[in-house]
Length: 123
Image (cartoon, rainbow, N blue to C red; front, side):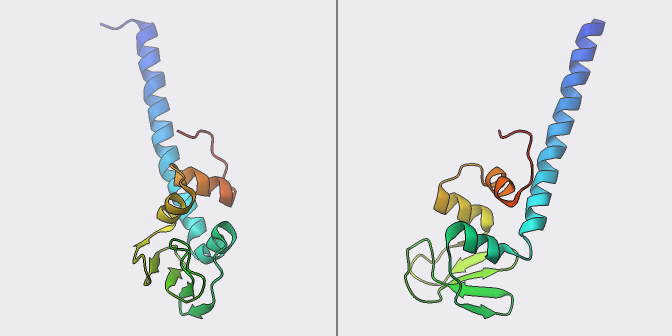
């Protein structure tokens, strides 16, 4: 039905799709595993958030989304989940924060590059 050249081409595309589908999943897992445990340190360096107080797993400081100068309305856990109890009343994870503050359309690749994980492609 198909010629040998077409079969080889289809096999090549199938392997390519499998490789890149798995690459994207493992990249996400790598980034999340590196963020877990030290998300507040990444946020301090990346967004210049100065956390003023430690409360269990949480760090408290001023919210960078509504340019709060003083206060402790912004809370970030070690795994990157954050909440603002102040004026903006928003919450999310590290990927949302990168998108909101840096207007980055691909936060996964941005964080991977920032953390030091090498990526082969950036869709």
